[in-house]
Structures are given as structure tokens and as C-alpha cells.
Image (tube, rainbow, N blue to C red; front, side, top):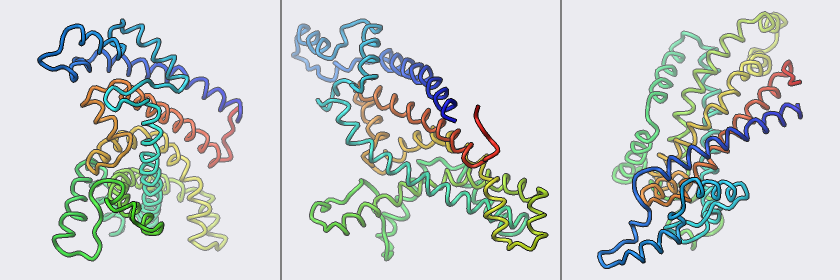
Length: 327
């Protein structure tokens, strides 16, 4: 197992470097000049060149690439053009917010998706299976950003207008008076702000997981060892959750790595809609401001996290199925 993990890590290095290279040239060869945002009608050509020199934009693109890549591998992502701070410090503040949102959404998606898939498989072709299949297809086909907008309208805006007993904040991560709250009130405030963005992201993911779980469970419960377990008089719940579910989770676990790219791309839209101070919103704002160091650092980190997620999925695959051993 250790040799396999080491091989996978070494094989991921060229992949990350390739993604970083494509990202760098895609950003730096795009139309526009970050220095132009500092221009004014009375600025002199010498001042323009000085600004470009301070940003490092007066060097050839291949020289900038070598410097950026060598510095990024050491954890130095440069200096933000617009925020006038080290990019590493900005990401250190913002990244935990995205990880909280992503992990809560991913955990909720797997719990909801697996449970719904089990119910559908056990009640195959029943009314409940048909209803859940329609709902799963509905949410699976729905863009996450559109669902986010609808949830803001219904559970935040309209809920206040209609006088609902519970309304959820539609923007931000904390309330304006957060600093004056008690520790318990602060925790409650953060949870309330997390509900809508995490649910918007989790429902779309859970729909796909439910379909995969249903198909996998239907294949497993038809196996001979399941019929044998039932013939021995075991409780149906024990048969489903102990014998069938463990084997049915094998293909579902592989979804973990496949869902990570969708999860991170989904956070870009979700964080923009909910004004959630995370990596997605940071990258969108930086693109609009042509803050190249922040855009490249954010893309580099997202790519690395996707590769790490695929590695974790492979390891979990072996843990769930004891028949699998990597030599």
C-alpha cells in the first residue's frame, strides 16, 4: 500500500506542474494589462513603465514563468496587485472558509445521497422510488448557481416578507453585529449563514450520488451471499446496512475524486451568489481586477486539491474493499 501511495504521489507531480503551466500561460497571455488600471490621463510614459517594472510585467513571459513556478513550489505566490499584500497571506485567510463550505456540502451530499439511494434500491419500482428518482433527476439537472439564487429568494427574502418563523441569511459568512455576540450566538450565526450555500451545493451533488448508490445497491442485493444472509434469518436492516452497503459503497467511493472538480467549480458560483468570503469569490474578483498572482495561486491550489482528492479516493477504495490490494 505504501509503495502504491508513493507511486501515485510521484505520478501526480507532473500532472500538477502541467496544470500550473497551462494556467500561467492562459492567464498571462490573455488580453489586457494589469498596469492599465492605475493609469490616469496625466500619467507619464515613464510612470507607466515603472508600474510595469514593479509588477514584473516588463520581463519576457518565459522568464516570469520560471520565477513564478520556482517561487510557488516554495509556497511564495508573489504579491497581490490590488490588495498590496502577499498572496500567501490572503489565501491563508480565505482558504479555510472554502474548506468549511466544501467539506460540509460534501459530507451532507454523501449522507443524503447514500441514504436516498438505499431507500430507492430497497423500494425498487415503488411509489417512493419513482418520486425520489424524479427529484434526483431534477436536482442533478439543475445548475448550482440557479438553485442558489432560488434559495436566497425563497428562504431569505420571501421568508422575511411572508413572516416565516425561521429565515436564513442570504449573504456573507457572519452578521454585522457578530463581534458583539456571545460564543454560542457566534456559533449559531455561522451555522445559519452556512445553511443555504452548503445546501445549494449539497443537493446537486447528492442527486448524482443517490443514482449511483441505487444502481450499486440493486446489483449487490441480487448476489448469492445476500440471499444466503436472508435465508439464515438475519434482520433485513442488518442485511442491507452490514452486508450489502459495504460492497455497494465501492463504486460510490470512487465518486469522491470525480466530484472534487465539480465541487470546487461549484464553490466559485455559490460563493459569488452568497458573497461567501472564500477562494471562489476571491478568484472571480481577482479575474475582474486582473490580479494575476492571486488568480494563478488560486488555480494552482484548486488543481492540487483535486489531485489529492483523487489519491484519497483510490486509498478509500482499497479500505472499503478488503479484496483489493495494491502491490
